Image 1 (cartoon, helix red, strand yellow):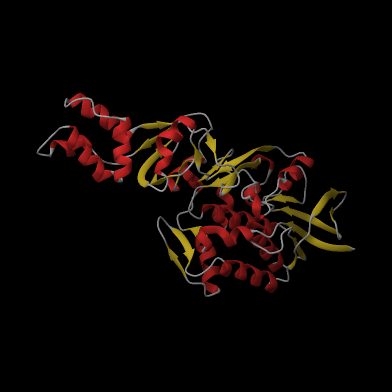
Image 2 (cartoon, rainbow, N blue to C red):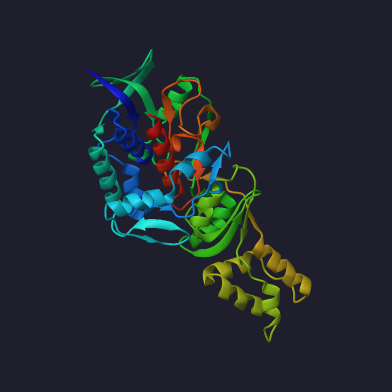
Length: 387
């Protein structure tokens, strides 16, 4: 069955649907092909089912990429305020949780319903349960599936990354990029919990469920948020954030007493001895963690040097994880199609006219808190205008 279109979009996620809407609005015949049985599966499970759909403070600095300038154009062309206007147009109630993070009051389903309605209004055709087996290019693009063959002058790859394979993530987008000669930076799990080696697991993992405020740092980045002990290692917002910037080898520094000068606080106490130090730690940290910390890092005496060393240890716990919990627990995939292969304005391949890559399949990874959705909306919008 031959079906001519102006553009075929592979993937009905956030980026693909936004691209389809913008292309359809401009009178293009747009077809979206989705291998799953419904659109926006990742949208539906995001934000605990309420979808952290953007962040008011999204800036290029919130993104990691092999080209630090690449995301600037798209992010400037379609801003968080633009997406908020779309949400408000559809009467979706939302709230700011913290740090500019915007969530639906009710359900992530409202976002997928909104995008589906916008697609209908723009005349976009969506086909589900389509497994694409091959893509060819002669003059135009030919997309082959097990049930049909489709043709279009433009092909947009919005297939996402490798994260959360249980909802259908595959390497298809990366494979397609390589097929057409584009460079792909090795994908890796990002925004992902970290796993301890056996030694640290025995020391800490019976504290699973205990959380505390930390500053997690690598050489180039730091985040102050909550950390959570798990049965395998550490998680929580601070750890998910720093995992994106961790190179898999270097230590991660954890400050367990952020912005606290414990020497000053200890001097203000009537007693200044190891029992006072223990009491102070129990005020700062959850009791179980404070007691465990003192088992492993006891204060050696009452001298100024002993307390200074004890405080230094608390501010600079050096952790070398064994690895991550992998794509099954990763919120996103870092790496992907090299941005230098694409136009920053349109997302079109510099080598293959008419071929576009958008969203998570591109080597642009946002921090935790709605930034990756904003990249999806912005890159999809830019490509949608171009098709």
